[in-house]
Structure formats: structure tokens, C-alpha cells
Image (cartoon, rainbow, N blue to C red; front, side):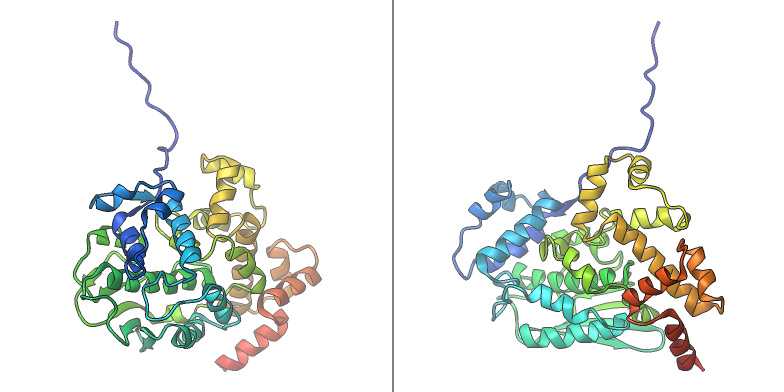
Length: 355
């Protein structure tokens, strides 16, 4: 008598996030000028040098982020040797801190543009908007690489757009989707990954990179504060590679889970159980994304508080209770920490702006 084998229950085991080898080759392309052998660097992070010769090769995302940081340290250049000047150690941190304190994403991107003009003369970042749409444009002040489709030039554009989009998402604590992106080179093999990283609608050709998004996204308030930066910088700048990919968004999954039960949120152990992951795995992935369970909960409370104060005339004490604060004074302290002003003055200022 034959026996049927029961099908496994529960969700399928998650596949490890990986990166197309084209991104690795592009990141290493700056080594050519210094005649540096990439083999030892790859070996240090557990990658075989031969993988660079495999057009279909892929490497684990975490190894790619580790290689990113290792390469920056070896070259003492956060621009990987791609540009005419070195991006000295600390550039990423100063860029983050220059954007913190902005009122909204538009101001943050304007600050980023001004900062990058000082440290990166080869590429020009501009933000253009009208009533309906907005554009992030990246153009060259001088040709990067020997040809238009050279891996060095391709990666320079890939890297800067990833940097700008990743930081934007982190600053406003949500995804900032790009409707389409025009990349100024022929379609590279790694473009199969672009839907995970940039947009599902990539186009190729033209003389500059043009990323299109809805203009209302530029009005999103900046949700991060100086205290968040220290946690975010752990593992930086390589961690920008893991942020807000569609296959690597632990913070987003938890945020979606907590949104329906903010008043009585589950414990981190309960969250891990619902995700069918170990507690340690959840904590590690959150750390890789520059977050923590406490930060996710605080971010949700902050966003809910801002929305309630902006869109309703309810008493502040009622809003505090709805968000789980037993004492209004505790809510006031938290709100001042988030925005730099009391909820009453925040509401008064908004009303003055819209009147």
C-alpha cells in the first residue's frame, strides 16, 4: 500500500538575498587605476575571484555589503576610486547629518545636492519638480570611465542613485517609489536586479540619469533625528546596499504587522514567531537595516501622532491616550524629541501655514 507524503506546512523558507555579479565588478572597477588585484579583497569576504568571470554569478547581499566596507577602508575612499577626487572617510556620515534636521524630503535632497557639489565634482545631483511629478537628475561634469558603457561609469550612476534613494527612504521612514528611471548607458546584464533596487520601469540611453517620482513624495516629513543616525551608521556605508530592497525589508514587514495593533503591540518574540524566524535573526536583520524593534514602534507612534495632530482637532490628551501614553506629559516629551517643538505649537504652526 502506497503512503502519501504530507506536504510541509508553513511558509516556504526564505531565499537568501543576492546581488548580480555586475554590481561587484562595477564596484571593483576603480581598482584598475591603482593596479590593485581584487583577488585578496574578495577572498577576505569569502568570495572566489573566479566569480568575476561568471556573467551569471551572484553573491550574497551581506557579503556584498561587507566587501563594500572593506574596499572603502583599503582605498580610504568612499567613492571606490571611481572619481577624480577621493571621497574621504566620513563622507557618508556627514551627508546623513547634513540631511537630518530638514523639514521634509525636498529640503533634505536640496541639502544633499549642495553637500555633494562640495565633495563630488564629477557628478551633479539636481531635484526638479512641477505640480504632478518630480525628477531626480544626475549628470556628469566630466566623462567617468573610458566609454559610456564601461562598468566604472555604469556603477557610478548606480551607486549615487542607490545612495540618494536609500537615504531618502530611511529619512522619511517609508519606501519612496520611483515611477521610472532613465539610465544613461546601454542595458547592462545586472539590470535584471533593477526592479528589486530602483524601479520596475527602467529605460536606457540619453545623456543623464532621470528618476521620476510623484511630487507629493517630496513633501513627506523627515522622521529621523540625530539619535537615529548613530544606530544607522553601524555597518555604514555598506549597509546602504541592503536598505529598502524588495527582498530585504524586515523593518517594513514588522511595521505593517504593528500598524493594526499599535496600542497593544506584540512582543518581539511574538513578531519573530509570526514571521517564522528566530528572535536572533529578526534582531540581526533589523540591525543590518539600521533599525531596531524599539525604533520601529517609536516610528509608528511618531507617524500616527503627526497624522492625528495634522488632520484632526482632537485634544492632545486624547491623542496621547490613543497612542498608549498614560500621561500626557510623557507624550509631550516624546513629541518634542521627534519634532523639536510641543504638539500644541506644532498644530498652531500648521494651521497658520494653511490658513
